[in-house]
Length: 339
Image (cartoon, rainbow, N blue to C red; front, side, top):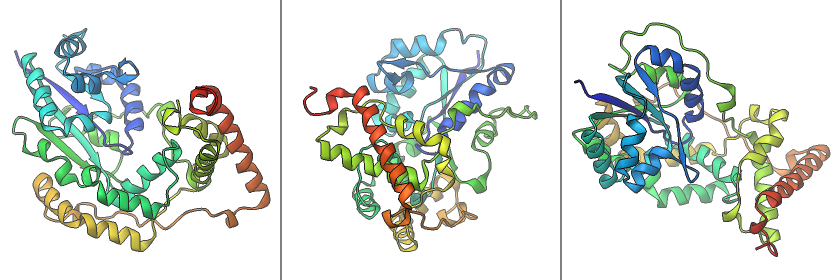
């Protein structure tokens, strides 16, 4: 009997993973007609099931999850960006491949990658939006340089690249490359006989940027939380309140980009050697820059207090108060006197 294939879309973070999940759900029946089973995300104690299985090395749970009601399908697909973090560790990757081999399943790993300036800008926004920090972006860049682990792809994915048993696909991410879901479905040898159109992604899975005003609001909330003595590490559902309050305002249309031209060039130069090494290994191209050719230059787009009108200032400060109230209701233990 031919071994099944598990196509694991593992991110990375901030590469349209929510959009891809929505597209997979929208096209579930089409995939089933092509003998592809879309696996449910599943959760164990709030953590997505496959990343949890890999970190806990629970072979029994893996066997049940992959073999349950999947006998009629030749291929399986699962999407969770958290899997990247698990599979860059050599021992975890080896365990996962061994466990899959024991149950007759081959792994195909698909990972989207952003150019570092774009990626650093996105992760900066994510940290701000979740009230993890309010540092200036210049300080955040220095932090990224000191913690090469997440942005130096050649080092980060060394175990994946050097694992001979693994079929992997690294896909450069950016608007110039086209729709990420369609690119995932068009991987060589994945669905070679399908020529039809795909249905659009479910709207509820869109994950828009909060925009310059949204970032400004999140920074203001973080500073207020600090002034109140709140323990931000204990906050629950930390990103949902910013999203909920600003969504009707469509602030995401004025996108935040916190890097000036010098900072962009500094980042590119810092990762240049490593990027070229990585590009040569995975794309047979010694020039990372030529792989990402056509990338649109992003201009500095930030917000200062002086840029706001009095009405805009009042609106944002009112919203900050609402966010604090929501956080207090959801996570009272985060605030002094409620432990």
